[in-house]
Image (cartoon, rainbow, N blue to C red; front, side, top):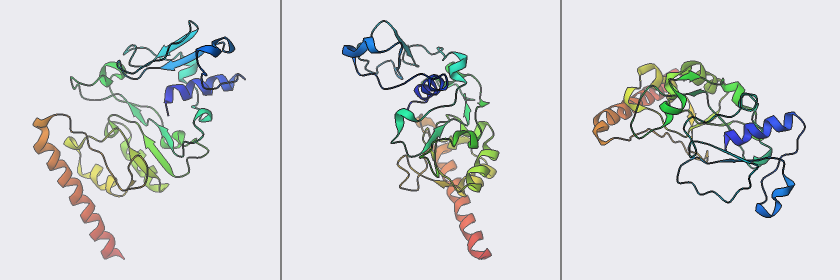
Length: 223
């Protein structure tokens, strides 16, 4: 699901407009406005009429939804088959990797939504997909504790930064019911974008595994 499209749908539904997927150029006269999102510069785009609004990083790093749309509650109307909640708990990033546009587009990290504010999909049940690029920079403690408290299945789909993980972060993470993007398997994704980080990556992974093992031992002894 495209979160920007979901916000656009949410805004127009809130003012009483009908929203649907674009049927194609032959039906262009049926629409007052057409919105499209281009995620990457190489993303293919179909031919669109003049009354189209195209956004996304593939068009411009710095484009934004109008404030009244950007502040709208996302709607799952066009994504009825989506069976999980999706959103950001924080945006931005502390790092400036030369291959990544996130710091240029979003700036330094800032809190974006609470976990409860993301849980709005009528069909989402106990599954949560977080899109955060730098999850451990914001209210990670509050967010992880809430995820654990609600017993959510959580997918950190963008990956976590294992290079700088701390004892407290690893301990809380080990208590989460983390899943892959299909929510069928226990799975964590850790970002590894530069070969020179190999030692730090494996040190971090070993650290997380150690915390998970200690937690299992403690739970066994307490039971």
